[in-house]
Image (cartoon, rainbow, N blue to C red; front, side, top):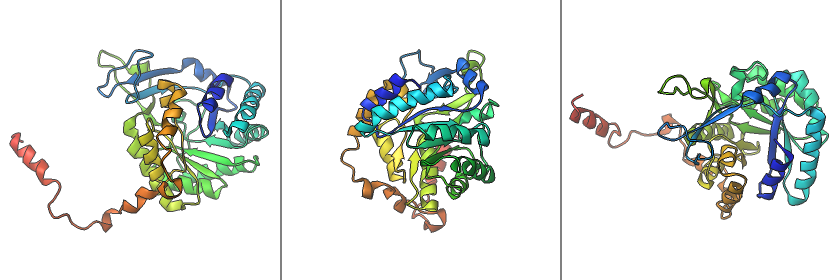
Length: 318
């Protein structure tokens, strides 16, 4: 969200950096004034600021960059110039408000960045009228087509994770001109404080290591449906190099990391990259999908897997 933050991620060895999203709404920018963050331990305890760990979940409210568009373009231009000789492209991002406005902003972003992300999966869209979250294929196609017609650089489209059929959204985005698909945005979340009230005092957005299998489900299903020639960007659940590997094995061509940066700072990027150095990406990306069968393809098991659990229930007197 700042020039210094973008430079720090570039210096840490990121393959690319996606900048904070913007849109046309003053209300979306004001939303940053109520941003709050609660890191939650696996046992449900809220960590004090500065004590978060990689295994924690994150419940938060957030908003968009608060600088005006001209100043933001200046920051992005500086970051692009800094990243280019270091092999790190900087990507501008729009969180959808109205498609026509997103197209205008996208055109401006495309004048300084080599690619634009259209984020239609922002989890705060359900709680804030300043941004929209699209979960129907027709609406996705219309929004993507409007922005696609306005920008002459690669367009990445980030999708939500809680739609009934994310693959259908990905197909609609691709048909409307998306060059790559981001999977998936964080989930809406709520956590009661057992001493009374609610953590953050509101609804929020949730990400955690436990979200990883849900994100990988949609990455894998989309890879199989759209084919290996459609680049997928995996996100939501990656905290470690092994998590990144799982995204790649499920079919992602690249992986976005956010929460791990907040917990450990840009230095975590070097750790993640070091954990991937032995990979042959040409053969590793999507490699897990060959072992993922549809239920109808699985023959009956020699011994029903549920039997041990029924025995346990009987022994407990149930």
